[in-house]
Image 1 (tube, helix red, strand yellow):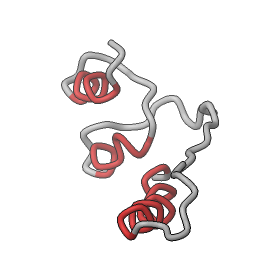
Image 2: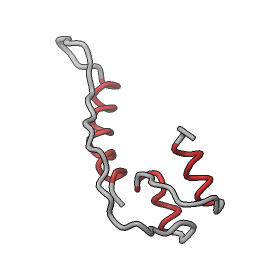
Image 3: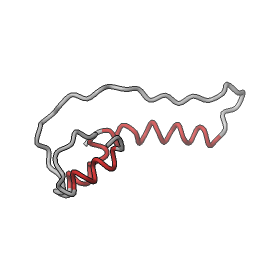
Length: 79
């Protein structure tokens, strides 16, 4: 499988273990539908970039999207 949600669903259904990002399975972990068994395995670091055209005025919807990424993304990446 190459779809993370499908892998998470399979793990919750009892089809075996899976190595998944905590942000994806946070609720399942907190609700006890999944449990961590392999401890902390270092994942692959990655960067997130927001790119927009250089204009004299940044459109409000772009500013709001960037602000939402900055404030919500780090919280979603951690358990």
